[in-house]
Length: 109
Image (cartoon, rainbow, N blue to C red):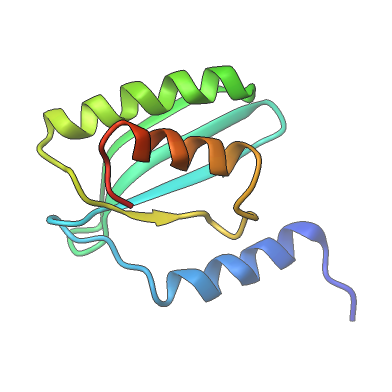
């Protein structure tokens, strides 16, 4: 039985999410890529709420800028430590650039 690309990613995502949980002390930073845009957000899974989310065009330089503002917004909310949820994507390219820039700006993930 063949699975589509999105079905495979959803399976990987569920495999990752069964072990990852965001709390109010250590929230979950999640990402999503569409064909045109890159989305990132912060979620508290205990309360089932999204604390913050941002969207930007899918270019590496835009994503790096967004990660800087994302990190500063997290610090304003007094969040220094987070769990990174790559949502089933490989950790390379845009995903890695976003996560590395968060780390460079003082967010521990």
